[in-house]
Image (tube, rainbow, N blue to C red; front, side, top):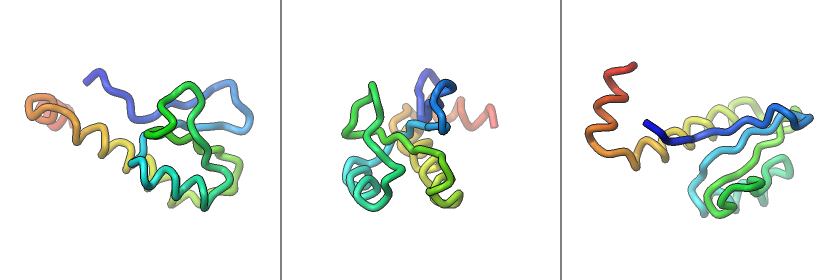
Amino acid sequence: MGKMFALISETSEPLQINLKCDPDDALALRAEHPAIIPAWHMNKKHWNSLILDGNLPNELVSELIDHSYDLVVSKLTRAQKEALASMG
């Protein structure tokens, strides 16, 4: 649908993934987890970088990926949502 909910850096070590996030949640996550930082070259109000160095629980990473996807899909038009559903 021409939208992005995740961006993975192939050159960073350890691996990093940028995810869209609710602005209030983004700040709370950064305060609670040192491995979650403002996303480089992204709108830092809405995007976090997760440093995947083993310090974040896999369940949290999965939840944040789902949250990012849901935020992006919620902004799609009805027609785009229907087209996306027909792909699945």
